[in-house]
Length: 291
Image (cartoon, rainbow, N blue to C red):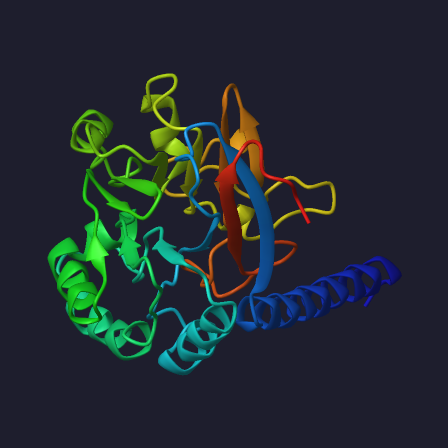
């Protein structure tokens, strides 16, 4: 063996070892306890005299991926309940997969853990692309059995908040016009919850001052410079998400967008630089004083 061949072999072994380390670290990050992120948003249409409301935003459970089982989801539900939010919003992708009709067995695994999730103003959900790809009906039925209402392009009012649920834009199920029409006459401070931030450009100006979303996993694997490893599908080249709405709080014209990293993982049970999280957001009037 020549010296060159030995060096090539050593470099290859080092590369394999580094890849192995990254996979182990990434898997541990993917199954770790989610980070609880906090925000406070002032809404100019907040009803006079109404007390602030705390909202828990969760997304991308992806039950069926090896990074998410019932035991882990149960622990996360307990973590959320311990913060005692007034309202819980679930922003889609409850299951994982691409095959039509495959969601039934997976969706049943959601019922036990999510049936423990309760809040004074209720628990509401929208669906994500994986839910539609694998079978939206089974997911919706499982959520209903867990006591969770699905807002498919419709709105409800709870307390001072009107929740406008817009179905998933990534899988072409969003109908913002229908959702906003159903909000007419409800009053309250209007917020939008949707799965993919792709719905945001579809919203008329002034439709809502706050949009809550998931889908992006905050990039799932992110380089140290903050760029996601992949923003397009390796299979068809389709853009996975708009980089403007990759993660966290984004000020967009006259509205605020909050994008959660989600709780589970997609196809690969690995996260690097984008740990799982959920948000606890306090909503209230513009004039309120912060502690």
